[in-house]
Image (cartoon, rainbow, N blue to C red; front, side, top):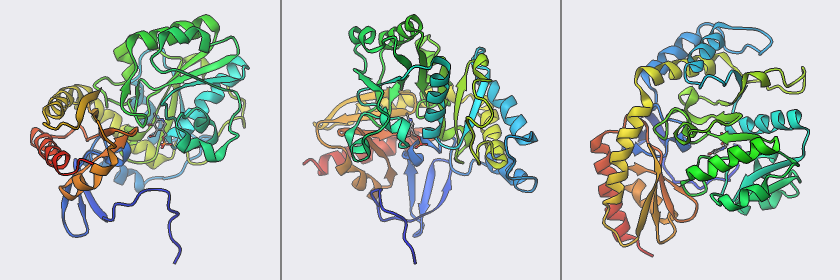
Length: 382
Ligand SMILES: Cc1ncc(COP(=O)(O)O)c(C=O)c1O
């Protein structure tokens, strides 16, 4: 029998079922899921409203290329548009986050005809060759160089360097409002404002990567809305289809005809099952006012993290339900002991434990995380 290629750390448990904020292994043991497949299951595992929409669609039609219209896609566009600020009139459909970044860069290149893509220290934008080129950490990048050659890395949150980094040769600047993989590092207001102003001055396109921060995760529908700026393009993915694969770039209306036929495309993009799930997710998003819930439960979660008594804890970072607990030591040594105590979590950067729970997380769940954390930070302290 073949095996799946090994490029992920394996935790040695088999997950067989999930419902909302919990998953169960093959021994019937329940875990609180603050990993959520790297943020994908923000609306909960098997959320009944999404299950219902997918089941209905399964009986109708699955695969419809973008050459044809289909009700599931029309319904998605209608529902998702209600979550977009007014100027964002075009959606480029993809299947993953990294593809969303790729298409955003392609749009910027086609419009500006300039070579340089700007990324930042500690960024993460994906693992295909273009998005990998603007991903900072060498552990993702080094083995595959040379990558896209015209990349310039600026210093994240250093306003005084923005002018120098964004020259007339820059087609686009790509930035996360809160760096996820890089350590749950929020951008400052001044930094994003400086990027907006300088890209406008130089005729470059500002792309905000909302793949981890977007769709309510940080307490706003899109994290950039908390900064009072608007990019030219933003990307989204992860939770948008309630757990099915999706990535998209959202752009100003006038970018809608940027590609000639054949210049862009994707076999699976806009798949009807995914569209039905994403339409249901977008409707549920409004009905349940998910950003407000993320903001209020996130504040409680952050408070609980800040009260964990441990000499290893440095500070709590992030916003809404995208939170990190920075430690004085490497964070990955604690993931297994949390798992043994029934909590799934992630790391970010080297020293940060990261929590990306579903929006339905309760006060009791937060207490569980806090008590598990104080226990594991006491017992493992190498
Ligand atoms: C900010 C950001 N951009 C891009 C990606 C890549 O998304 P995907 O893994 O769906 O390709 C991720 C994934 O974690 C991300 O956090």
